[in-house]
Amino acid sequence: MNDITPQEARARLAHAEAATERRTGDRRVHGRATAAFGLIMGAYLTLSRLGEGTGWQTPLLAAYAGLLVLLTLWQTRATRSWPRRARTICYSGLAGSFLLFMAGVMTFNYREHQRELAGLATAEEPGLLVLAGVLVAVPMVLAGLVVQRGTRA
Amino acid sequence: MSTGGTTRPGHARHRLDDVIHAPVRFSIVATLAAVDEAEFALVRDEVEVSDSVLSKQVSTLEQAGYVRVRKGYVGKRPRTWLSLTRPGRAAYESHLAALREIAGG
Image 1 (cartoon, rainbow over the protein chains, first blue to last red):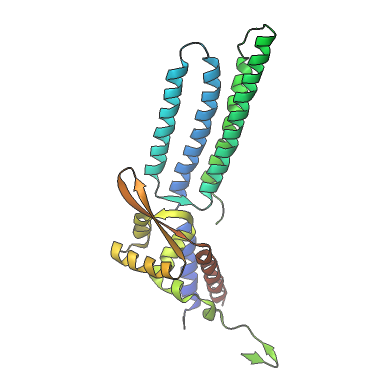
Image 2 (image 1 turned 90 degrees about the vertical axis):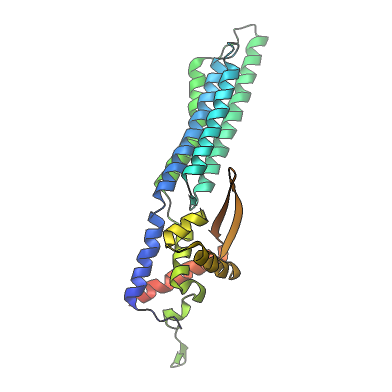
């Protein structure tokens, strides 16, 4: 039989509660990394379109890939746990940003093709490119904020 | 136990999970309940036990079906990750509910 006094039970409940609160450091890292992934994806979409035909696309792609690798390494090495539901939230944000990224690429390709057919200049409006970059970043930035703030287990 | 033909629920202490009730295992499960997955070293540091003690207690929890052990690498370094299984999480929640009842008097 498990004999336990009310005081002991309260102490164990306090211990259990404290175990949840100790994961704030990992939450912060996962949250910031997720938001940064989104910002990098959004910036890449905008800058790669703005830099079309300028010779900056290859260095930009290398910088994009390099930043993603560095961010992944930092996230992996700076944390020792995935707080409750954090991974699901991060992957949901990634799925949202990725879908918007692909939608952006397809939309801009379509618009470029239409302008070519109409004999117009092929360059996209910078304001629209910035807006698309911001939209791509939003799901992962939101996911990062949710992870950093934490959800009840 | 019955009184006047009606069955009374047993005292909450009877609903405490024997596997989780041991202090070290309770600390391990409490740590894992707050995460989806944690490194072995993190749990060892949180629970303040040696590698061998943690291994032994984790084996007991694994045999009970409460903990899952996953091995992998970070770079070239081998790592072990621990997580609660669904039955493990359910058993812990039930254990906490019994503790709350006892704590409430």
